[in-house]
Image 1 (cartoon, each protein chain N blue to C red):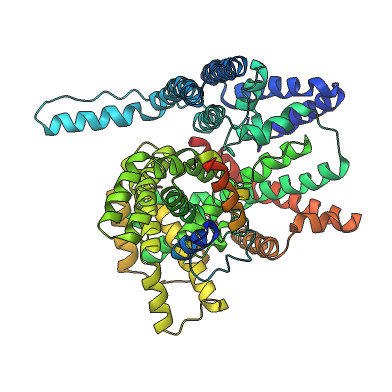
Image 2: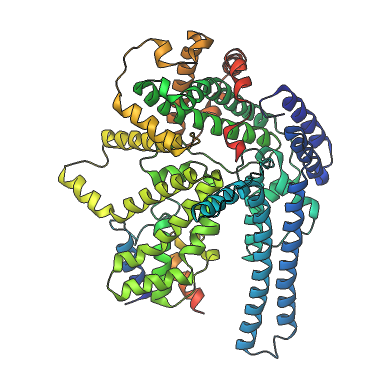
Length: 77
Length: 534
């Protein structure tokens, strides 16, 4: 499974009925609120063994699946 | 001197003239001098404690920055000689050193706040505990006077300290600029709690005068004045009377008072924010939005994304996230996951964080157990709606409730209003037992026995039936204004200022006339703003 697919799987557990493939404003449009962000960050940290800090909690990193993939790849380096 | 005074208008007029005459580079110095002058004039006390907070904030953020800079310089100088692990270890060392500095800065700043705000609460509780344990100790009360704006400027300073520690931006090297950031007068009474990266560029840049901006904000200020003096101050005597002497009122009167309290609190707090924002905007400095039409919220969680936004986002960024991502929470989450409690393992970190954050949000408002209970109820309601989201969805589905329907949305809005107003009303009582007794009276006899104005609006009607009518019309206008803003991308004020001159003058005159005629007498009774006590 690719990083992208794994992220979408996690997102679907956290919040259903969202088209994560197409959505590019998950935070800006209020689809992901702080409560969902917490679950998401903890799951992403566990799954990809990366340390996501409070500094990484900016909308650009969570607005789309692509943004999350980029953030994880950056943190893995 | 408060924002609602002729002396403040004169004060601001002088500041605006000086500000726009001075060379752009040094305009911020006028803001600093006038911010300190405002503090003195507002409470007749020198801003000694605010100065101490400023010194602590400046010294410790400078120290933290020095640690980071030295570490970076060393790494740069020796980059060829150090291995990857050695570099990591050096960075970690710098981080833990600055963490220690940050903790000291936070503790010292909180200590000042705690001494003034929580001494009597802590001493009183310790005394009660010792008495219960058999030690006959009578706790002493200190009755320390809370320095004006201490909860707001302390939290603003703490945010800056933590941001420098997180290396979100560099610390400010000019002490006087930090002093202005901490003391900026439009937000000293009731906030909003500003962020350095948002406020500093605007404060220090030296803004140009704009006629259209001034005109637009004059409307905003007058709308704020109207909310405060026409709505909030006219409702205040009824609420004070019923809360203070609830046993002399009937159930329906109590219920009506409770529901009107929601309007009073909103009109008072958001009115102050409009005034503060309006004056600040005239100077070209836009404060953070503190309200986004909270009474259109369909849930408690949404309410708190729309009400006192700067405080809620402060708690989210500096407490909720760090607790949720802490190693302790991660360990608990992992244990639950191992037991195959997947959903709970995902939710538990945020539930723990919510309980801590909401208890402290309660304590931030006032040092008493009622406020802690208020915070906990907020937290528990949000946790339960999160935990049982699927169950609620299933029930709605079974009952054939169309979630997108207007009626269902309206029901949820009214439900949230009633719940939040009832919960906030609890904090108006000195003792929780009085609130419970008052609620029992209200529930025992909830139907009206008369429809006369003196029965429905006791204390307000003393100022004449015209006062009741004006408050009613003002509330309707506020509702129309809110509905317009909710459904359009631009504010109603912007729309009015785009109309003809005659239209603008009529609206300005009506606002001013209503405030002057129907606000004066009541504003003397209530004095300042409700949130200024925090």
